[in-house]
Length: 181
Length: 229
Image 1 (cartoon, one colour):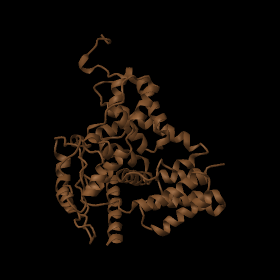
Image 2 (cartoon, one colour):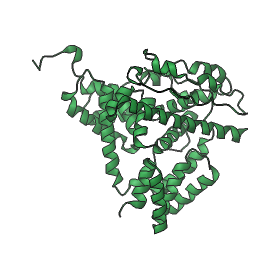
Image 3 (tube, chains in turn orange, purple):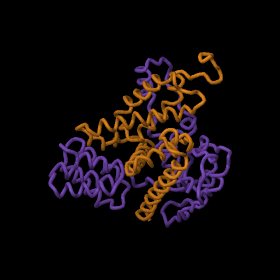
């Protein structure tokens, strides 16, 4: 009987998915290239899609991978839409606020800006692998599900992006030491 | 390389925190969705490590050596990659990061953070997610000045002040020729130049950039300089 309830694998509610995964969806959208100013709209759209597709969701699957796939799709659509918009160039400007603030906030913004610039320099597949794998700790299998690639391909991209990021941070360290020493 | 070293990990953790939605953001989206539930509580990582970046900076020079020994040990969640489904060739680790002389008293024994590939790739036991801890280096010590200048260029470009954008981008390039945002400065300069004077030479320059790069930056140059008006 297809409608027989199975408590152990019953579909989660939209509320539950939202509570558990909104931060993941938000951060992923942001670091896949959605400006902060658009993040609310994009995350809203993500969960509209989640709600629409919820009846088809297999609870045995990874919810993070499922929502990650939806997030990726919505973000790509968003970016394509804005690519044609005349204010596209404005998208270069992340919501970096340089007004004075506590040191920790400034430093977090610096880290955010550093990471964003790094991600912007990557091809999209490596960007996706790095964001999902290093930032959000999805497994290679989950990332593969999100992007439609096998885990070995995902891992190769992730490793390459990780090396590039490490090199970038090391260069920053080296400059700091030179300038400070 | 199968894991980031502590300096990169700390920066990534700080960036992750920075991109978290605010409670107000989450409540606003929930309201639009008709979800009555209160905004979700902060995840464990945020609870465990508020101000991780600050503590990290403060710790530099005081407890870095101790922290560096600790930082490799923990993670917040299971490791990203599932070794059961990943088959990898032998990996050549990058050489340990050798610290140079520095005014900061304690420089990170980065070698202690160099991961060995075997545990990450072969252990079937999920590791705890990395816990952001005070790291061994201070990678953003000079980012503030860089960021101010590149933000000035971005803002000028976004507001249509292409001349000011190009000027700021060029200033960035001169002042920080090895800076963390040097690629973005190039892109801002290219886009601003295209908008100031979209002549054949600029189009060729943009074409060369786009042909040589596969990135969001290249997409933006293409949009601004090569797309049909």
